[in-house]
Length: 150
Image (cartoon, rainbow, N blue to C red; front, side):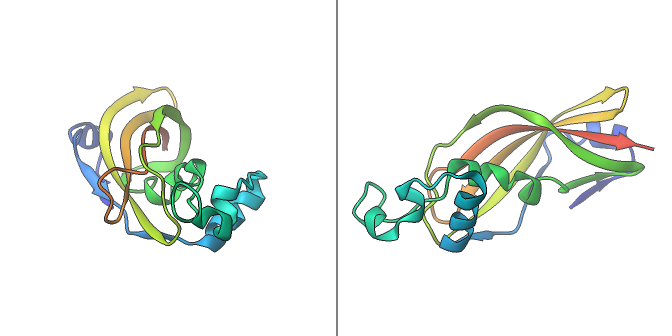
């Protein structure tokens, strides 16, 4: 995790990249996500049928990969005096490659911009969710966070 002593120091770090640890996307995680979202499409939850399908097995929901942004990307950067960080939203999201069951993914988060706002500082990260061994990422998103300062 990158730690910055001030907002000015954070702003000076535009272009800095932090990489998370790998996270396993197994069938249990996919099934729990399907249950939480009521998205039980066979390409996600039916291993037998999915084995005969276009991906040769089940794949994670695109939104499962996206839902892991807080765990993978948030908290990669800390600013002195920060009381809390909250999700502010997303800009431009793409899912270039499916995540096969039992793959590992991680996030590479690049600081794109830092903007002072009345509540604190708004930070835009370009987050690329990589799939171990794949040539294309699972997802690419511009993630916006609001860091509330003391």
